[in-house]
Length: 315
Image 1 (cartoon, rainbow, N blue to C red):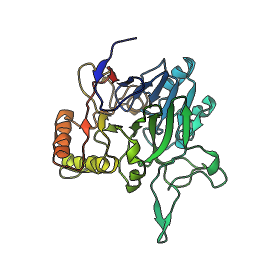
Image 2: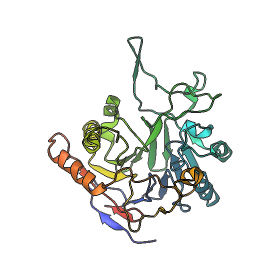
Image 3: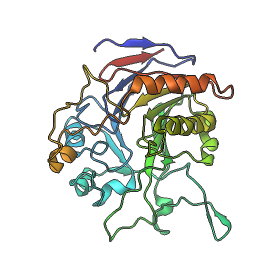
């Protein structure tokens, strides 16, 4: 077992929780005897009991990494429904149909955004299984002391090739990961773009958020200002104790290789192209976010930047 850097959290834990950010949107989480990997991309390739995939982009649903985990003895592959279909999105893996051979577990969001149709509230997700199959898809899984709950997290609205069985735009699927012994919870958001009011439904259940930096950035005149305002909407709704940023790139010992040929779309998309940083200056970003939190008395969240590739112990 390699050493860990300690991180103090103001929450009693049944056992120390180990957290590793492997770069991109990849997180390895060890809770007691259960080891999870969220969106494994190049790392980790061993020692994982359950892998959770938020959506079908190649840097989140990386079939070679998933295959290595399965060969190593992965007990369960948990995916969002779109991962089982061919996708026309430019950054989707060309190997998605292979996932069906891995016999994955598909989750359906328990927490989702409500829509209004014809002036009336529609209490169904804007994306859903066909009516005859909806009730057959679980929203939660119990993995010993760990409970996994599916959460809608509006992402980049990929396009799925027809014919398919999904109705409506396809959302990125987030996962609420709870240690039921200590009621400590971690929300892994994948590539979320937009908060929504129904997040209040599970706000009291979230202690720590694994948050992709820079995802809502746009061609706004002041992108950082726009980003911070969006981040504060998330924090105001969720009220987590801790926010751990990911999906950006720092230099030095970053575990994802930087070298790739930008002019070769296949290499950029499907080999080791990183597509990161999401932001050009993460230190400036984190400082600005902390300043915004300090100025907002209704938000009491600590921002905890981690070094990619290092294992941290929450205790």
